[in-house]
Length: 124
Length: 111
Image (cartoon, rainbow over all chains, first blue to last red; front, top):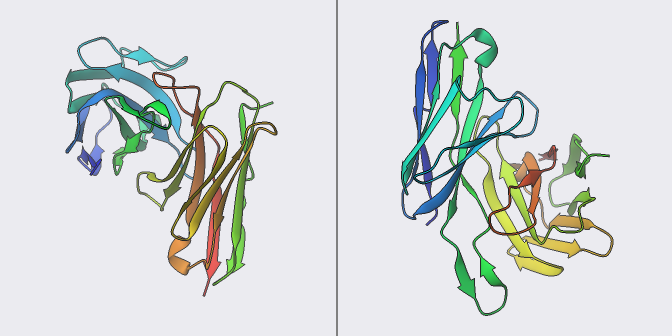
């Protein structure tokens, strides 16, 4: 269980074009999805947090008009890189957080995130 | 001081060794602690998830949390070459709170 898919896994595009990346939670409902980017040999950098049915919250320094996020359902979020430039080339990873659940031991749990396999974007 | 610190490595060990990976943090509000494994050009994979202090064991992996010292560890017993990856620690203050990731430690297990 807890599988997250991303599509496409690898995309090459020309400078100035837009690219859409899909993130799907396959076997659970995700109230929150996250978008990260990762440069080679560096850690994950959170770009934005999206909750189903509401506007995404962007991290400082991330252009919301350039990175459009839509979280239309509990299983799908999309990231569109608009007017892509070579400096946007990176590894984009989404993650999804399941609905909260209660356990006897830990109280409200479900804080964990499950990551997709990532999308490698190369802008020429 | 960064919120989460982790030695980036690389850490090289022989096959069969016990590996110790560690993170320190500064925010005492963190309650949820995760370890992820990330192979090259792949998304992170959740390995261990711990709430509050204590130990948790799953197969060859043991996660420890010491909230008084703000220190978490991941131990890998009988390490295998297939364990070669980058290990990321992550933590959050609670549901609805964003994760804070460590920079990751690159581990190489040599056959």
